[in-house]
Image 1 (cartoon, one colour):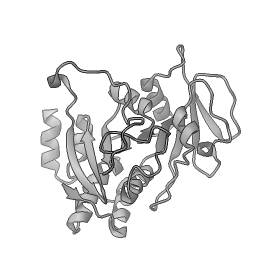
Image 2: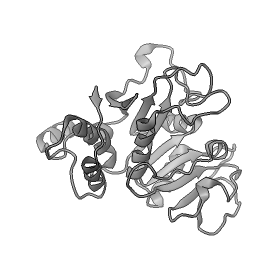
Image 3: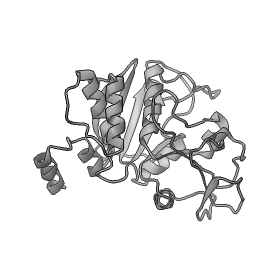
Image 4: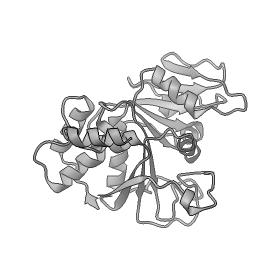
Length: 278
């Protein structure tokens, strides 16, 4: 397990990777800084195309909140900072309307340097009020993905898609957001939203941050997954493990592009070998 140390200089390097001005593989760094580059570099890179990432912060027993909905301290301080770093590295953050209504998140970058991403709410039936925190005007793009004709306040963008059964197709959502210029996306919650993108085969990476506490009951990070009858049919992603303060982060690559993103940018021979094999 690599223990992550996000120093100011290594975070500056990672932000430079995001802007295409540097790589994550060259330079002299401490082992902890190198672990940070290994963890965040694949998300920051843009040379391999758009990336769709989901992140879950959960307890040892797989809960993301208590039965009453309290989720504020599931992840430790470093685990929470990790989420903010991911926000700073993507073009947009996606949540479902239930999460927007219940948690009232801001989806801004506050615990590290970096720009606020676009904030995107999947709201098939038009339930989200215009005065929700996630739609607050602060300079970042605000997008509602919906199946209704409901108008929105000035400045709020609308992506209208078919929703014949009151549900939106994750494939169409992703295609629509790409068409709006949003390349890299973080699917932040809730469980139904993350599960929908996972089962549609749209996630390049899944990061699960596990905190050392046991809750006993409450919602889970992945909800209503289709079961497998045989373990040999279970999804077994390529995985790396990182220490993040008191939390453990499981970084799962769910496709060939995600695996290539973890390779050193300047190891051309290795990259060509892996690309040819796939």
